[in-house]
Image (cartoon, rainbow, N blue to C red; front, side, top):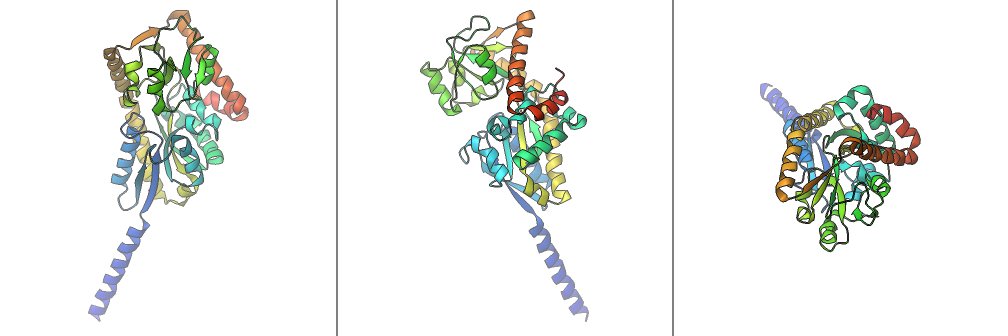
Length: 323
């Protein structure tokens, strides 16, 4: 009888262990950014945290970056459930949710938005429009800049052809520039051939992009807006997770955001110094010109977003910004 009991307990124990292993969930993840670049590294750290703290509970299988999936397809892929987790800027899914780009006009970091209701509203809108859970965000403190191959005469880009994305299209248009939309992989050739005389890009990352720094002569100061890269989880997948699995993901996202708040100022300073050593000179607006530059950047973009999604932006703006 004792042998029978022990055998039964042993069988039950094995079955329980197999059940526990079977309960571990694997999520498929894609990044819109090339591995090793400034906007891929925080996602790498996030995945590492999840896989270390979530052993036996949840893990992430990283499929790849732009070589695995074109960046502009990542938003729709997480929305449709082709992938479970995405590291992607709202610039790459603005066709699906234009109001998400309002985050780049935020004067408040993500931790403050988590307290004042901004994150709740953003998450609600992501659920409705992106079929996704807005898990977290990184990039705060990385401002955008205009980079040029030749000096600009005041706030005038007439005669300049500038590479843009949706985020700074309205601003550069107001400055009189000719605008072109070129994939990042083609920008170096366009600079080399003189097809474009500049581009918009964050303060970090130009050294990651295949020689852009070699053709860049000027960076315009001050910067404008703030980079925002979202971590999105497909909503049906999120809803299928246990409380323990959701906690692993949430804790890892919050730790990633805390690291960003701590480390980004030093990162920015290092990148500015690196650009200085490269010979990239600052064109700096100060006094009334600085105020005018920042106001033009801000007003043109808010106007564009309010036109695209008036009801949503009206609710978001007071939560995101002071102006």
